[in-house]
Length: 294
Image (tube, rainbow, N blue to C red; front, side):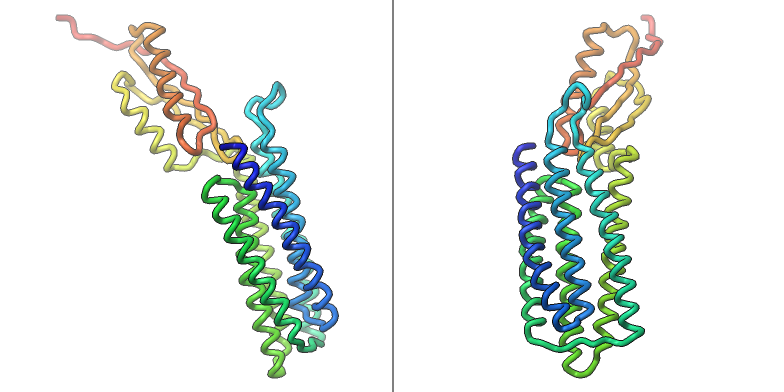
């Protein structure tokens, strides 16, 4: 399962690099030739996408390395470290595009209409839609923030290029200012997405707790054991896309060590089978129970 997850993410990174490199070249050349600010902005966006796909490839390679003596719980958090790089790069690209687009809006656009601009937009939308569908299916099968980041990026690009297409069509009717407005809109969109990806990765690296749905499933599993008198604590720590779960339960102090450890092992095995759980550690706390004397 982990090997297939690694291979899918690896392919997504390679496909992303290849597709975005192709789009960067054609959008950059055509955008500068016909002086379309929205197309130039779109080409910068593709440059950022190449970096994002490269980070996906590298981050996935590192996170797939199994646990060792120095990293007892594996290297899963590499996904989130490299995802943060993607978020930061998107914010930098957005800042540059925003400045250039505002500058063009103030001074006036010099966009020259060409059907080649239309063709490039259509090619971009088709390429990005195909990449979005692939990464979406892969992410649904194996939850991975790197795949999710790329999936969002491909979806955003489809929307962004659609607005680029509209701005180019409007130039046929002498409406040139919309080209710069679209450039500004693209920059804001990229910046917002970059910040969202950064914050999601930051939360995991700061040991955000397991989601409520998984926590409820854990509680249901624990409640099936009638020998447990009290759940003293449930805490968690993220490891990549999964969590280590720490549970403390209170049992009758008169239970034998074998019985209490067997129950703890049973809980650990069942909880660890949950999708979002990497490992479960159960601590048994003996308490004094008053038994009725007959």
